[in-house]
Length: 309
Image 1 (cartoon, one colour):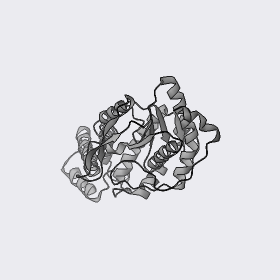
Image 2 (tube, helix red, strand yellow):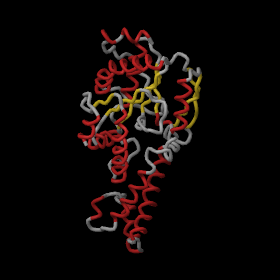
Image 3 (cartoon, one colour):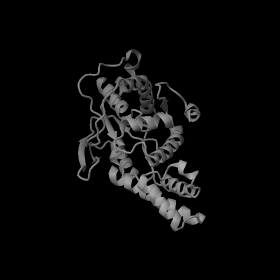
Image 4 (tube, one colour):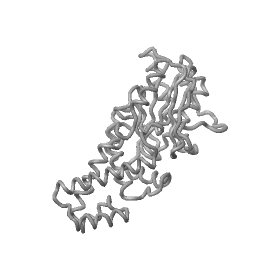
């Protein structure tokens, strides 16, 4: 790791040649775009400084970096470029996708989210005394039209406020928690890496039932583990040394989500509620970040994140 100290004075962005290995989630295809390069180039010198400081303080040659942020903000591309830059200066690095560690594949997780929203919404209606046969029938109509999470229906049907609030409360207790994600499993991988374990089994989980398996990787020459993940700043994830947050406003996050639309229905009211909850959690967790960068590719502090909301 000593060679890193000689990197900073004269470091320049290396030419991006050939295929850059991205995250390790099966089937994930994301192209490196100029904005990824701009963000990675801005952050990298500061990241190197943080790595050097951490190694000096801990006397450990193993460092864990987390790149977190909302949907489509560039986590995968930026993290992959960090690994590329580090390897160009002779430092072994590996990019791990946290999206391998939910407890359910996307289609089942989406179904679980919707089930929780609907069940908790109805339970709140019961608690508020607004659930009856007529309202239940109207609710089913909204569900069939996939507008049950749209606040605009409350104007004509005030009782829907109970349903939506109950659903949001239920989702808040699920999204980004240990109910949805196996944080312990990934924390164990981090602990193995930091302990210097040469070979580690990593989980792979794509978007289909058959894309769930494990790979054994050799980490003996890897000094920096970079985790790219929405939930990389989550307090349930243990062992992250240098958290980096790529900020985006709720509007920017929704635009990014619409542009990607990996699972369809990205513009639905239900997805909007999910993004709002995730965004609120990400903003709170960003307070622990050592490096924060705006969507406009500028260093900002946590107060700027709060004010951007």
